[in-house]
Length: 348
Image 1: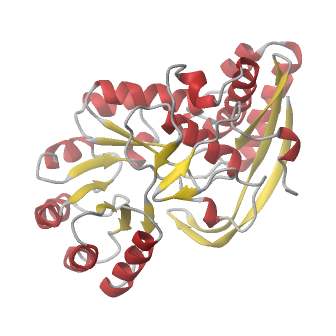
Image 2 (image 1 turned 180 degrees about the vertical axis):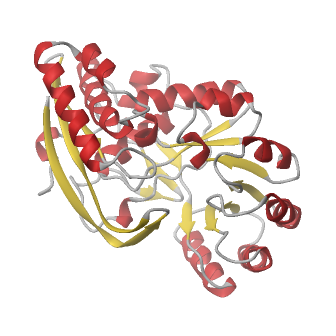
Image 3 (image 1 turned 120 degrees about the horizontal axis):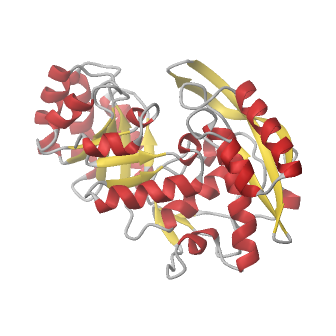
């Protein structure tokens, strides 16, 4: 097991609950297994995962375990609740090597009967005036996207509804619209927003209420707009969210959940309970983006996922083998992730 740090600049600053970040720092993980070298990525995002320092310590401890034990021992040493990004890095490298040894792309390692060459993806549009928002969505539609997610919650409900209405009038009924409030609304605001967004055919609102309010999310379901939970999955088990009947959709981030295998398992568990999975990244480099893509490809009939995030980086760890065409990301059919480990690194 080998660990290599990297830092990649963003193409533009990213605003988070913890402040604004201008780069994504993490670690490339390489692991030799079954005569193959697998490659993984651990890119922590504080507030969602452990810190960069804690991730490094977790990987260093795991490397010590790897020197004397097998991959099972390493996985057991990496707690998905405390160091999910570190576990993601190792788990991805292990799965990449396993899939290569079996001669299949990673999504077929999850499901040998699957054949998938495209995963639908959504475009994300930030906050702006009604005209600016509609212009951005129109550009996305012209680029081939038929699903767009709009950031809401920074403005009043009146202003956000006006933005969504302008978009709907501009692009018509054939474009799927989603909204992401990042937990900004009160229960009263969310109820009002749902009542007014339902006639505009908004598919769902992501995290309308604060993350810990599962009962509140459950109470606003069934009002014509779906409830998707994202931040609510950070500090609690997915089972508790499903048991609370609090969501129509779960936003699954493999980096936050401790690896592609965990994300795939939870996606299938959600589907069994009538909740739709949507796989997204945490603005990761190409290794983790590909891992998330393969997770999504392994889930039958999955809806548009939040994987079209590569343009948020000004540099990357390797050339991206995927392209987005007509609102879908092409899935590599080479073995493993679809990357040559020799070509992965901060100087790619």
